[in-house]
Each structure stands twice: as C-alpha cells, then as structure tokens.
Image (tube, rainbow, N blue to C red):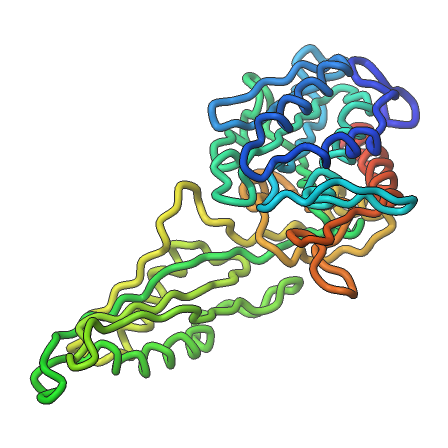
Length: 385
C-alpha cells in the first residue's frame, strides 16, 4: 500500500521531523557521534523499530510490510550521516530557520528521511535505514556496508535516497574525487656543477604540461551529459633538500574531479603513463593515489528518466541536477538507482552555509522534504514493476 492509503504497520504517524531536528542540532557530533547515534536509536525504538549498530558504527534499521521477509516487493534504502565538521556551532532558531552545525548537513535531511521511513507502510517490500558515522572524514562506515545485503536475508536495493542538502532539488549525478601524488626522481649534485645531476624540479615544466593536456587525449571520454568534463588540478608541490644542491626529488599533488565511467585505478594508470611520455627519460616517474582507509568517492549518474528520479522530483517540486560535492552516494550507485536529496543548502547568495558559522536549514524545507520522501516511498512500493 502507498503512503496515502495505509500507514503504520510498525511505523508511526506521530513522528515530528522538526521536533527531532530541534533535539538533534543541539547534540555535538563533530568529535564523537556516540550521543547522536544513541538518540537516533532511541527515536527509532520509540516508534516501534529496532535498530542495530554494526562494527563500523553504522546505524541500521529495517521495516517490512505484508511479506514475511520483504523480498517480494520494492526495497528502498535511505542513507545519510550523523557526523558533522569541527567546530560545533550552537543551536538557535527563529520563525523560519533552525541554526547550528549539522542543521542542514545532514541532520535536516536525516529528519526528512526518518519521516518517510517511520510513516509509510512498506507494503510487500522493505525499507532500510542506513546511517553512517564518518562521512565528513574517511567514509569508513558507508564503505563497510554490504549494499547487496544490508540486513541478513534482505534483497538488494531497488532504489537509494541519500540525504544531503540540495535545496529540494533531486541530484541524480555527482563527480567523483581522487587525489594522488606524482613523484619525480632525479640525481643530486652540487648546484655549481648542475650537469653532474638530474634536476627533478626542472622536470616539473613537462609534468605540468602533462597535467594540462591529460584530458586532450584521444582516450578521454566525451563530457558527461549532466556533469560536464572532468577536471585535473595540481594543488601542492614540494621538492629539493638544499638551496645549493640539484634537487633529486619533487612531488606534485593533484586533485581529480571525475565523471563516469572513469575509475580511480583507471585514472591512476592513465595519468602515470601520460606523464611518463612527456617527462625526460632520465627522470623517474611514479603516480600513487593517496592512501586511505576507504575507497575513493567515484562519480555516479542515475538516468533522469528513472522512476526514482521522476517520482521524487514530482513530489518535491525541485529541479533535477548534479550534486556539487563528493558524496557517499557513489558507494550505493553501483548497486541501484541512487539520488541525493534533502532540505538546506551548501551555499546561498550570501556565501557558504554548510560547514560554516552561519549554517541553517529552512524549517519549511524540512517539512516539504519529509512530505516528498513520504510520497515517494508510498509511490515506489505501489509500483507493480
């Protein structure tokens, strides 16, 4: 059954997303998510839903409808995160906005997702809530999730909604972000006799040229319909050990904003080969991706005509567009149609909102987002295909 025809069955019509958000924003979650996670688990329990916390710190809860195991109908996953960036910004509120660190990134989206999760009857299918603990840092929580079986015995998801501040737009794509270091190796010598050495710093001229021409290769994919072209930017450089010595080493860090279908390893090998072709033969070249505990957040794109995209966009009344920041949605998009959605903004006309001292979320947007998620879940579980 859909949201309009049947509610309850383990959920609750009594959940108030604004009341929840009022409490959630007051809780500091920039250094530890323990208290915020406890409140989330307690809130779910108050509304008749048991939650578990896995070894990676993810909070996972599920609701099934008429089917005993929820495997015969649509399975929708709702994901967001409860950690915030430093420092904590105290809670405040007026008639139009709730202020404070995490109000829009991403406790406002969490409140909206909870409203749908707790309100709509899953019918013949299943709703899974999966809330990660460290999206703002290394995303080890989301990376540890078994998306194909979030709950033992569950079917893979048919659709995923990731809660982030989008201003009620439905974001069906996002660029990925890779980072790595290009290392040049030469041979040191006295600066008075430069021909006796191999100058690694001097080879940066060819290295930068290689970076600037990387996306001019024949193998470079055409710009993505939604995301445009990828970008590659040198960001930091370090080289040399003494001012009177030919430098034997130089390192340049690069930032890659990728588009489908590029993968992190594909990018790594292609860039290393491209630099190698342009740097002098006597200079060693190595490109290594930055070591991290979780996979890089790769680019993703869900078809704008997918039922998830169309249904949520119709319910929310917003545009369909790419998300402008890297997101854990990339971990889910390889398994099911995925969108990013929620109330609030990364930035407004006055400047940064999320991750800033003026972070806020419009109260009306939280309410509209909650209704949009509720309507969308109801429509998705009513689908016969």
